[in-house]
Image (cartoon, rainbow, N blue to C red; front, side):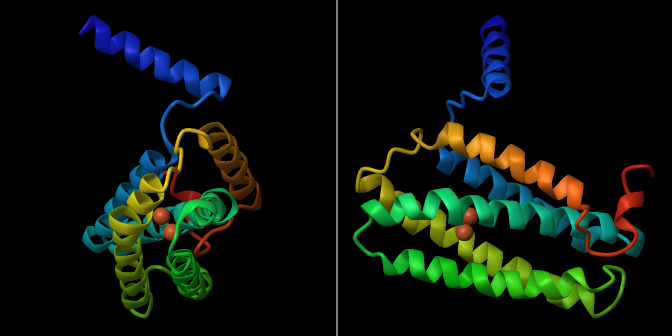
Amino acid sequence: MREAKSRQRESEMDEEDGSATEGVFEMLKADHRRVEELFTQFEDADKRARTGIADETLRELEIHAALEEELVYPAIREVIEEEEKVDEALEEHHVAKLLIKELRKMNAGTQEFAPKFKVLGEIIRHHAEEEENETFPEAEKAGFDETELSEEFVQRKEKLMQKFERSGKKSSGQSRRRKAA
Ligand SMILES: [Fe+2]
Ligand SMILES: [Fe+2]
């Protein structure tokens, strides 16, 4: 018990001084689980709650995609034999972003929003599955060191989150009120 606690404290400290010890694939997988959970929450939520959930999902996805595109994919491309895997992943990001762009202009409580959001969820699920079952393991097999990028990854994520906070990107006019509620 005590050991678990001190381990926890250790990892918190790591976060504070920016020296992450977790591998990037682990962090990306945690993101995948998080957005999958959000897509499920959206389905179960009433119309009012949907705006906040959708807003968070889209923001999480945009930050995640940016991290992969800026840091992780280029590093994978360097080691992986099948570079087409990275090309396909980027194309899937592109399709997801088109949907995200449309969704951002819509109201999450409307009937038109739900099917588009659901399809985005399906694309993301498929995409994450391919990353986790094919692309990431292949990169690891080819010698990708997933802890090498960790520190940069954590720092960049922090910056992107701040940027999104500042720009107040949202899926509809109601999202700002979610936290106060
Ligand atoms: Fe991806
Ligand atoms: Fe991913």
